[in-house]
Image (cartoon, rainbow, N blue to C red; front, side, top):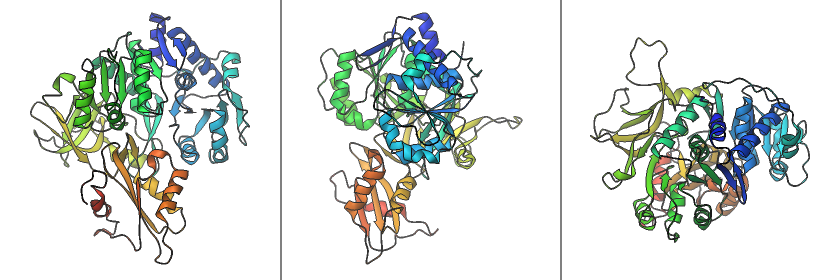
Length: 527
């Protein structure tokens, strides 16, 4: 049994080559055709000189070429780096430079916007472009056409890899600084796919709708879970929530994964009689109680799985559907093949209902952050309770989240220990946003924080200061954020202050104190 993530796809192709595997729009590929596309992509990347463990970035919306490129990179013996298609060129260039990407797969339209930034990426040698408008080669880079390469590249011997090798790097925001790359091994991804597919009881008859970005671990898992079970996945780049309902009906979808802001919208829409959905899953934040109740009324035959996860360990807990009414507000228990601990600051285990930090141990724990030993050391530490005779202790992920465990072993979320903002399932670094604002004229100080929002989970509030005689304009600051940042990072509220921000005893800006007047901003309550 192989534990390389691309082998799931090839094993399903060997068992049932004519079974449906992947759809986008009107195009359907069976497992034999998808395996062939991945194999051809592998040879095209190797023909471009891809070395063992070298990185291939894929900067595309969800489409068949995206999937072929990612799994083709894995099959070749490289590492795939899915880049969120909502990111702006400066952010994309940071990712390409940070993990020394050798090959980029993108569209001509995206390349035209990105090209001026590629001089910051000296390790990038080759850019593949998909079909579309004419594209010019960026300075110092080789340009190849994806379809031509797949059709003409000769076969190459793939690089030998084992399950401990790196399979993918997923970039996610932390509470400080620019996005960091979470390094996932084949073992991490294979264990995660098997675990989730087991408790969702996926079979070849299932059809999963992929609505989340493939740069999210939660979005990517729709593919890996489908492939391990021999099920099929449908790629959807939706504009409106009603597009999701229509796709569920059109493609006879049985499994749908989403984050709370999308569920809030979907819960308000009419669903067709006889809806084919067998199950729903939620992660990326707690699903509001009224939303959960509305979905269960609208889809009484669909099971609801409430889950908690972090990119550093893929998925940690799930609440079985049968426990929803008995344990309102619970994030469930550990998924198969993982152990979730609740730990005191001194590393000892908490008692029942005692708040502590959630610590995840097991095969899903990633390999740390790419090229960032300091932040890796902060988050990845030895698992509690190990025998001191072990000379190489097992590493666990210390989540920074405070939870409690009841007497029956079910977990409940209490809060985060850092300043990370979560908007529509996206994790946003306040520092990254603030750094972008500091580049604007007239801004002396900037503070960003999240406040509760009924639709988004959290909304971003940005406060800026300037000189008494030259205050920045709030509307101009927000418009500049719209120009420089992806939509999910644009502040919902910008306020301008005349003087310096208050400090705490350590001399740091009193972020929590500044946030207090805004906590009820979006719920209609007085501040």
